Image (cartoon, rainbow over all chains, first blue to last red; front, side, top):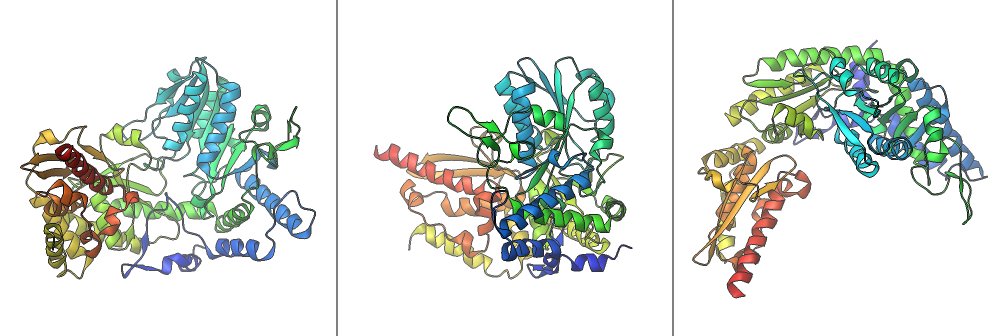
Amino acid sequence: MFDIDAIRNDFPILRQKIYNKPLIYFDNAATTQKPQCVIDKLVEVYTTYNANIHRGVHYLSNKATDETEKARKVVQLFLHAPYSHEIIFTRGATEAINLVAQSFGEKFIHRGDEIIVSEMEHHSNLVPWQLVAERQGARIVKWPFNQNGELEISVLKPLITEKTRLIAVNHVSNSLGTINPVKEIIDLAHQHEVAVLVDGAQAVQHIKVDVQQLGCDFYVFSGHKIYGPTGIGVVYGKEKWLNGMPPYQGGGEMIENVSFEKTTFNQLPFKFEAGTPNYADTIAMAEAIKYVSAIGLENIAAYEKELLNYAEEKLRSLPGIEFYGTAHEKTSVISFNLHGAHPFDVGTLLDKMGIAVRTGTHCTEPVMQHFGIPGTVRASFAFYNTKKEVDGLYLGLQKVVQMLA
Amino acid sequence: MSEINKRQDAVVEEFSVFDDWMDKYSYLIDLGKEMPPVSEKIKSEKTLIKGCQSKVWLEAELVDGKIQFEADSDAIITKGIIALLIRVMSGLTPEEIMNANLYFIDKIGLHENLSPTRSNGLAAMIKQIKMYALAYHTKMNG
């Protein structure tokens, strides 16, 4: 079953003290901490089989290549993608979206076309589309959310026109925690032959994802938010799109034949992986996925839900607290403000008590504009957090209220 | 000793009584709260220094060869630090400000607040204070 002590023991960073107080790490939506097995895997790669992959004839290169391709397989199974060549490694979710936006955009988005982007997207799922729209002469159409921080299908329906080419939406909102009805969105989009990119950066560590069941055209996530290393991310793309899309970057590895007259490109997935890939982090990310899968996403989700409910109940009693994002379906994210207090002040004071939260706009300025606020304080929980830590946050906030009153 | 360093040392002395982070920040919050309200007209797009987290407004005026600064922030801790900066920097000649070596922030252990990555607008505010000094200096001597 769920042994929280054993789990916490897997994460060495959690034993630390900050300003002489035990660390309470509630900034998991920004990045997650790494279990020892992931750290060990990185050390293993560099100490025993580091070599450039896909090109060497020697033992180490073959071994590193092998492990990287096994990692691709791990990601494929994790997302339940039909083929491993539909899995492309990138630097992170941001680069993953930029890859799709630029390559898909160049081929399939033209003058006068429309791209629907939800109002609750992280800037990384808005700005790349704005750049493409600018370049191709297309237009961004905003899909607004309601006061609870939910996207409604009925609002989306009239936005889809014959000019719509793609819908960009997150599976889970980073600033509000809302779990969006991506399956319904995709079904509706496909009725109109519109492609859908799902940003899963905040989802894969909380929810079991099945890209075949969802039917999405593109699904992206990043390694560091699922207990893996930084600098590695994933695009899942349907083969039919990926084959039709031009390469994203040029370089080694992504080519078939090169001459000054004409260069032909490698097949999937290598067509989209120019240069020496980040194989060490790829291999370690697969280790993180295995770790999470062994604990079980269902178990993780159930435990995190319990933490969320406990925290919401507890924090609700604080005077002047206001929650943002009260969707029915939520991950373990609480975005809030204390009346009259700037989130920056709240975060600064909590920090001095050893409590790490995120403050500000969370790279979702349109969300803050929607609510007319400068930002929020965001506490985001992972499965290594405890109710005792939530109590710590509660006591910390009580103190903050006193100090700022 | 220069006037600016005398002022800095006075602040350092004041903060030396705090051995706890929370006391230090309580004091900053008090300083922020006690700051006389600025006239709304200084809070304009022109005077705004946008940090990613908190906003800072800064206005400068040359009076009898000395620069008077007025500033505000939407975050109270930022405002408390602004109160200290104004106490140290305001009412000096452009030259004094240009040549100032600001060490008190470091000495009272608030240097992290001035890191450009902290994005509360304070690092940019200090840069802006120096820019004003340079501009007035050039104007007076040009």
